[in-house]
Every structure is written in structure tokens, then in C-alpha cells.
Length: 113
Length: 115
Image (cartoon, rainbow over all chains, first blue to last red; front, side, top):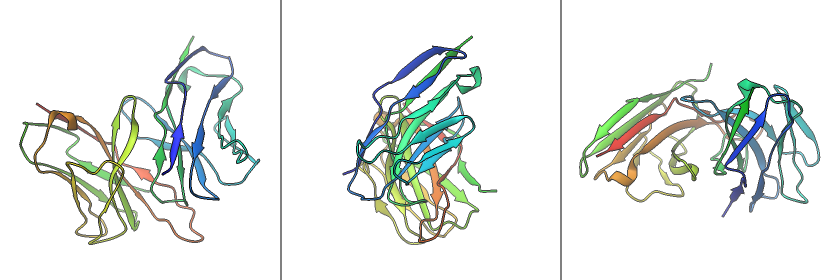
């Protein structure tokens, strides 16, 4: 079956430093959709980024990610972390938009002043 | 705006008791999903549905049943609740299909504690 791997359970960094959260995946789908969801404390997960195009950078709210099918990766990056970025981040994949999602275990990002 | 409403938001149940978690969506989406969220496991799919009358097993269906009586409503049923089912449960809806670009929307979650 499908699987998504997020190797970091917790990432702690200082405001202003760059962010990189890792995501790799395995899937039976030849053209999977990859997503990053963000969940702030006591809130529901909401979509941050999505992509299905190989080697194309997608950006939203200062975050960006590029789907690399050759390495089955979809890492999340931001050039400068803000305090408000502190949240739980999930990488997920699906066959198509709107279909069931397979999530990674999540990475908690804690940004200190 | 897409809306998925879960009830109750918090629930304490006794071991062996029956628990029903309800979900209503006003998005007119065909698909609905139930996930549970646990630290170290992320979000895991329990059951899902393609439309009224349809239920499908997800990745961790044991100990749970689901019911989809209408397009709008999707319930998760724990016939004999156990402490291991203590978790936060999220309902979601989505509308897959060729040419559609609709994301999956999540409800606010139900925190269930089984004592």
C-alpha cells in the first residue's frame, strides 16, 4: 500500500532561520497528488500546498515545495521562519484531488524568538 | 465556504459502552472520511464513503462501524468502546472526479476519552 515518511518528529529553530521539513513517499499511483497540511493547536488540518507535477515548485503563504518523482520526495521549505509557523505539519498523498489521503506521522515545528 | 461539522466536540465514554460520532457536511461532496489522530501515528483512515448508502473500510477499521444514511451525514460507531480508542477523531469530505480540483476539508474534530 501507500506510505508517507516524515523522519522528524520535532523540529525546533529560531525565528528567521530557514525551515526544511522532509517528506518521502511510496505509492502504487503513477501520478500521485502530494500535499502539505498544517494544523495549529486545537484546530483542524488545513491544506497548505499541493502538487502533482514533477519538478515544478509550488508556493503558498511563504512556503514552497517541489515534487521530485525520481526520489519520491516532497520536502517543505521556507526561507525565514516566523513565530506563527509553529504548528504540526503533515505530508500526505492521494490518487486524485478529493480522494482519501494517506498521511505521514507529522512533524511538529516549534519556532522560538 | 466548505463546512464539515462534527458532534459532539468532546465525549467521555465508559469501557464497553456504545459511542456514535456524527458528521454533517454542506459541501455536497460525494466522499466522506473518518480519521483518528494519535501522536506518533499521524492521521489514520478508519472508514470512508463514496455516497449515501456506501461505506468502505480504511486502514484501521477494526472496532469501528460507519453509516452514511444521506449525502450530508456520515457517522462513526463504536459498538464496544475500549480505552485504546481514546483519540481525536476527524471527519472530512472531498469530491474526487475528473476535472475537479476540490481539496479535502476537515471538521474541527471530536476528542473521545474512553475510561
